Image (cartoon, rainbow, N blue to C red):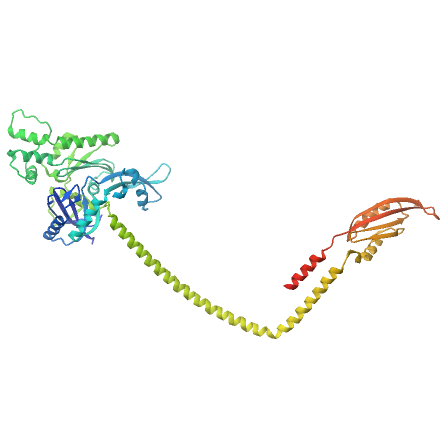
Length: 551
């Protein structure tokens, strides 16, 4: 079963209270009650006389047998402003409050610090030409002190605020449920005591909303001024308008027979020109903005819909068929509720349970945020405590594991002690061998291998090759030799010498030709030079050996 609330609307002349379910799905109305607003208790929606008004609300609820303490206030005030805008969204059902709040300074040229902002989504998200999504929203701005006055009233009356709605939004939420065609355009006019709220609706979207500063007071004021009608109060004048057809079907009607009674009725009817003229200007403005979407019907609601002849007058003067629904769509009534035209006076209250604006006092919001931060702090502390316990548990387990590992390695070290001395002896022998290698490297030079080099040359040189002298150092070797072979054999000799390992840059020059003294054969004297190839630097090799020894 849905939660029950009381919805309270405090008007300038009348306070309305509705006891109903707090749900957007066909809420049930259990009862309605109204009483005159105490004098000077409210000014343009602002609660002035808190104590007196709180007493009246408690008494009205007690007399009606209403025990519910949860309340929704519907605020009727000209200080509440609204603007329509669109915000880009990434997906449906995403939170758009930060996006809306970022635009309020552009939508409302006011001091944002002194106002409370909220919004209501309008219709479904629409696709843009670029393939993205945008959501239409109606943004509302209310003075902070206006909203705070209702929190003060709730505290004085012993009530808990569930929500605070704007009067215009509450009416729109009800009226959009009365529109049967999603494609057509419907105008709803709620005629109250001293003002009329005009909504133009299509496809669950509010296209235009205006407040006309005239209501049924355009009729009652004339009735009160004319003694012939014999009424003393606005309530008596309103009752007369409901029970008798005082107003005519047209403005500026003629009275060819100079009937005094008809003349008074014409006077009452013509005074409605202020009301009808302002509604007509709203229609003209709408038509200029939406030329291809004409208004197809007018739904008349509020106190004014019970005035006899009002529908015919509006239909004839505005040129659009005007009617009042026989049943109120979207709302159910308990069998104890007497359903008649008068029940439509409470539609501002009925609509507050559907999709409220939800104005929240800055003080309450800050308190909730602080409470949320405290809750977050408690959760963080609890989380940290849990993490500490877990970390402590893991630390204990790790300590036990490390102790077991230490015990295992201690046992292994004790088991290796008998072979430690033998290992030290072997290591010393390895070091000595490496030191011998180092000494050999430091003592070695290139000439130490010269005899081996001569043997290699002997295998490559011709048989007549004889060495006359040899000069050698660490870099190169010079050999003076003679041979009786042909001169061409010297080129072959140079090529063969290049193949010997350990030498390079072989040259044969200083060639001279002579004849032997005995045989008279030609012999050639020449000089062979070559360089030793570079070998591994002894210092570098010794460093490598010493480094490996250290390891």
